[in-house]
Structures are given as C-alpha cells and as structure tokens.
Length: 154
Image (cartoon, rainbow, N blue to C red; front, side, top):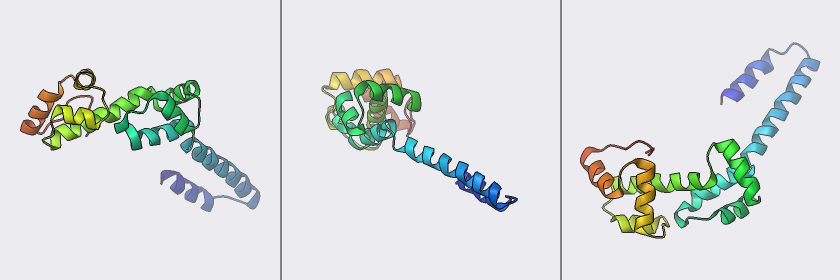
C-alpha cells in the first residue's frame, strides 16, 4: 500500500510528459522486480512448506515443488528468508505444535504424529531445542497460564 501511495503522490507531481514517461518506466521495472521476487524459488518453497509442513517434506521434495535444485534453493532461501529451508519447515511445525498444545487436549504422541515427526522422541527433542520447554510441560503450563514461551510465535 505504501508503494502505491508513493506512486500516486509522484504521479500527480510530475512536471512534464518526458519526466512522467521516465518515472513510469522506473516504476514498472520496480514492480516487475517485486513480482519476480515473489514468485522466486524461495517464496515458492515457503508457500509449499506452509501448505505441507505436517507431512515433513524433505529438501528434495521442497526443491522440486519450488522448481529449483536443492543447492540453489538452499542458497536463495537463506539469502532471502535468513534461515535454512529445514529450519523454516521445523519452525512452522513447532509453532503449530505449540498452538495444538495450547488449544487442544491432544496427547504429545498424537501431535508428533499429526505433524509428521518420525517419533515422539524426535518431536520432543526438537520442541525443547526450539522453545526451551518439553511439549508435556509446555502444554500443561500454557493451559494453566495462557503464555507462550520464547521462540514460539502464536
């Protein structure tokens, strides 16, 4: 919206047609760059992960969905999103787990299974590493206190 407001202000304060033509050319190029970056492999990968993180897709599956090689995707993803592909996938899974622990009476093993973790142990270890709390203590504590631990964004 800010970008559009900026364009709107600039459009009405342009002095002549040549200046307007030059400005519109620059504006269109900026819009094209924005659109192409939104459809780049990192964003396609992030969208795919958001839709399918509960199946725990591996790097190969994510790269195929993004239309990139795994190596290229890793480089671009880290540059644009400031984390690795797998860190991003796991963060989404842990945030969803925290939400389920906070809002449902599902057992820890049911959440681990629902989010595609290979075992309860793997889920518990990942959850504790990311949040500083075990899923069992987190779930009980959150329902009692209505809080969210560091590292988890509701």
